[in-house]
Amino acid sequence: MENLTKEDYLKLYDKSLDELIDISHKITLENFDNTVEACSIISAKTGECSENCKYCAQSKHNHAKIECHPLLDVETVKKAALSAKENGATRFCIVTSGRVPTGEDFQNILKMIREVASIDGLHCCASLGLLSEEQIKQIKEAGVERYNHNINTSENYHPNICTTHNFSDRVKTVKTIQKHGIEACCGVIIGMGETREDRIDMALSLKELNPKTVPINFLNPIKGTPLEEYESKIDEEEILKTICIFRIILPKALLRYAGGRTTRLSKYNQKMGIIAGINSVLVGNYLTTCGSKSEEDKEMLKELSMVMA
Image (cartoon, rainbow, N blue to C red; front, side):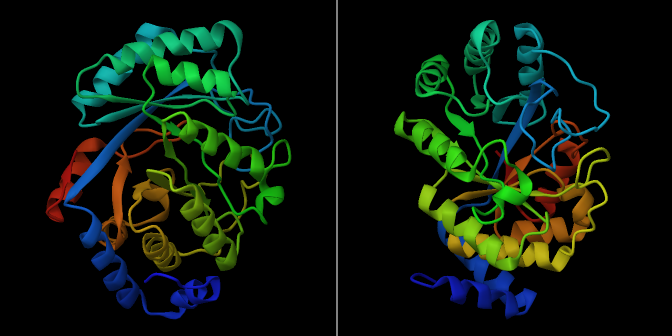
């Protein structure tokens, strides 16, 4: 389904869910086998973030009750990486709160990267904010293969979600990491009040950036954030249709189940999302909320004749 216009993509929402899943499933089969990439993350530094993202429990502008901590020590992160590998993850992402790490923190993060990258069979990823070009060169040299930096929402809707940095800051970071040979992991959060048009714009922005992986998060309203009482109008069918359309627009990207999928989708519809085109999963807990158990994900994939890899 090439050369479609934005209006054409919007009209896809009018199709039945069964029809959309059939289309997106065929596209997935054309481009991928039956393996599902498994990634695990660690919040190496939690809370006290200077940015004012409305969905985030870690922003110091918000009032979520979370357990904040400074940067973890290198050994703790390495042990977590080894545990993630034992649970089936093939990628491990070091995540820190804040706009950008500096000074001694950044030097210690480089040590963490080297340790994780040295683990046989485990690929090192990172999500460290708006890094400078020099910092990007250093994490590449230390062993980061893929870098997560989400666009989160559409360029049009971004000011409704965050005002301490803009959409172009995020795009620039993604392009810079790609410039230096690091794969981009760049995704979105669905259900923050955006329109269907916004969701199409997100997917089209991602198509232009051409990331290796696209994490699809679903808003999990957290008490103490501006979106804590937000009643999303996006139901499970709308989520599945959005996954289908993302697969149609991004036929060769790994679409990853990320935050919110265990609270926003039933077990049955989690399976339908995989049939529709999800072929990467975030296993274990998220940054400040609980996630899935790897055993449960492995069983779900087995029922679909797919394997975690």
